[in-house]
Amino acid sequence: MKTIILSHYTVKDTDPVPWKQTWETLADFGGRFAPKLAPMDIKLKLRKVVLEDITQDNLMIGNMVTIQSPELNVKETPIEDLLGLDLDYTPCESCRTTNGSEFPCRTFKDFDGKECQALPEEFFIEATLRVAFKAEHGDQCGCSDCSSCASGCDDEERGLHSEHHCR
Image (cartoon, rainbow, N blue to C red; front, side, top):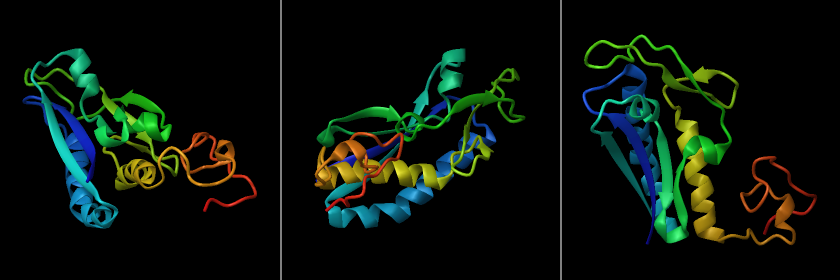
């Protein structure tokens, strides 16, 4: 069985609203999506990683979700990198350290162009499907020229697809 691991990073004693919402969405997604991956012999595992030190670097990592699959040689990768999302940091009323210091929150644009601090389920679906596709098809999708395929073989960022269809 292959394992896909989604990890959510937080910082000890820091629990802003967008971070809580991301974890709740991720946990709900995992509960509903894991049974759909089981017939593909894929186990979906969720991890919550709590960073101990309240540092600026750790606060900037807070609310990051990564994906990895050791069996598929997919190293731990932030899902924004896998999906080609723009990352920014914006003000957040609930983003405060235990001493009351404010810090900016990781912010993305969703697929409709709307900014979001709490990661939506579609990000988890898209990232998981890309890795699951690799489990099913390896590094090649079975089409004659993967350089033009939007399947994740080669040119997924541009989303190109030639006139032929993947088998």
